[in-house]
Image 1 (tube, each protein chain N blue to C red):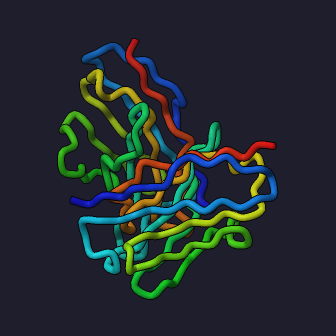
Image 2 (image 1 turned 120 degrees about the vertical axis):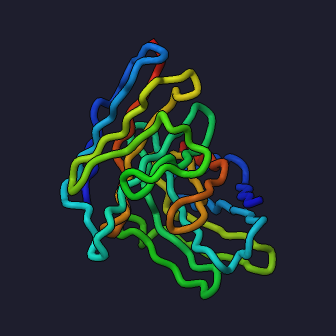
Length: 112
Length: 115
């Protein structure tokens, strides 16, 4: 199975400051169709996960534009440009290129 | 709108089985696969497999394939996930999730395995 490794596992950020989460896969996530099936999920306290970004950089409807995804191959980054209170939670990267889909360990984001 | 309602929390003994239900509404039930995932303390999210409500076909992750049974009853737009021969490390929140892109998540069902 593809191993997804996130860093850091915990992040304490001042409101309004930026935050970055790294995600590295054990294999390239480029699929045979040319697309890269790397998604980011957010899980707020007491809620189910929700997808923020798909295919590396495509924001889902309703996701604030302070969230952005980037990367290629096996190295990816989620950036929050100006952290807000409602961004507290755990963030997971997920690959859907190789069977079975696998997730990173999660990065806990809190406000300093 | 799409809604997934899961059954309530369960406490089971090691070696027993548990069956979690997921009642779907707000879309055509047969049109989208339903996936099952779990979130265990300290272990992150794990994908367990899917069921195709149109055909009843299933695909299970190798780790679970000898212990999990996914079924569905399209007449009541409900999917089920049964996990057998429970162990303490099966303690987790179990989610049903709609669609291959994991678009909609149920609220989760806490399953606690303890003697």
